[in-house]
Image (cartoon, rainbow, N blue to C red; front, side, top):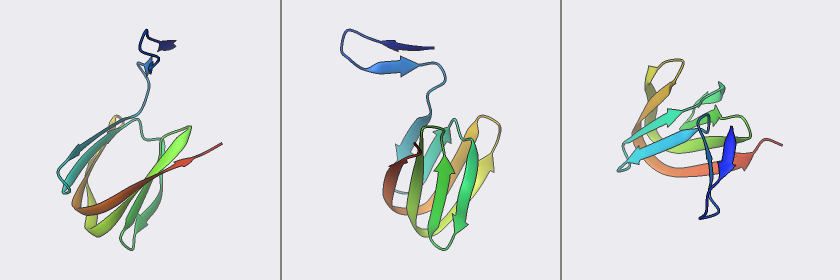
Amino acid sequence: MKKTGSDGMISSAFAPRIELTGNACCVVEGIRSIPKYGGGEIKLDLGKYSVSFFGDGLFIKAFTREGAVIEGIIVSMEFESNG
């Protein structure tokens, strides 16, 4: 259920969440699939959009129904609309 607050921001109990700690660790919640894994890139499908992580030594340290933990040297991130 989405709702627009007085600040104009959209909030949702089911919205994907990304938490980046420095350039070495990222927790991502709300993953639907992993379309690309390897070659310095990890791409995650989050529903309405995808997020790609680029860097060195990237790997998925943990993966559950709720999300994943990506570690390695994260050089950049890219968001892409899925529709």
